[in-house]
Length: 348
Image 1 (cartoon, one colour):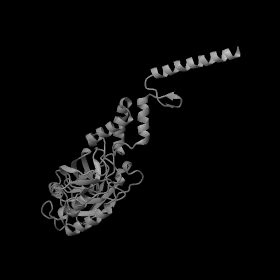
Image 2 (image 1 turned 90 degrees about the horizontal axis):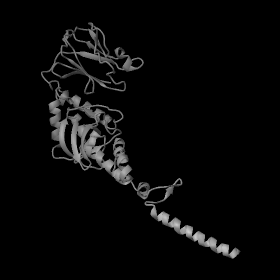
Image 3 (image 1 turned 180 degrees about the horizontal axis):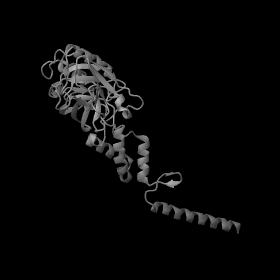
Image 4 (image 1 turned 30 degrees about the horizontal axis):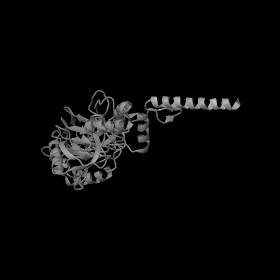
């Protein structure tokens, strides 16, 4: 009897095994399980691929954000591999619009010279707008802006370029932040500074080449080339002797104590200077103050404060509400005549 029951048990076990095997065959897409749960085969394939391969495109930093966003969405339905590819391709194609960034080794052709420090380029990774770091050229409408744009066009004519990243990917406008080098090995920013078509401008943290640019600028200024010429923008302003002192580091938070940030102009000559329509500028593209109907008397001083207030004979107010003008870590004070010529320059 015991033998009979063992045989029946064996038959019963075989029957159950056949049934379970049929059920497993009937369930589509069964694959390896993770944490005790079965994973559909198409997702398991994607997991295996993601664990054992490199990403399909060289997209980093802000690119990763754009690519990952698109890739994650697409990958939910088509798998991680195709999702990563789609995300990277989408980001690279739309370029600065989505914050994508190109691969390091790409060579670029020039689509357009926008001005003396901005380009539009095209390459295998798409089209991008590039803002050169380390320099700043005159803005449209300012003296020497046309010459700076023409100089950039001449430097790049017939050349392709490589884009050299320092630290940052893009600026607040979605433009790539890069040093630019031609296929002949020419550092475009350095040449713009050398010709006096741009100034050396530090944009932390992208300052790797600025020590060299500062030296080149000192040579250009000493030689009086480009915008450093006394008559770069009009007739020379002669007979002026004005000194500049600065107090860039206001007490406490500079942005909340604007009137303790100032620059002071002292007329060291024995005759007054009519400063009407003269311009005070820093190294940026946006900070500009224009004197209105102001005469600086012989031996007199006037202090230009960043904040707001009531103008007097000794104190003027920029009223640059909301933010400081002068960088504590270093900047340049330009005093320009009504034509735009640099009359006095203080680099600190």
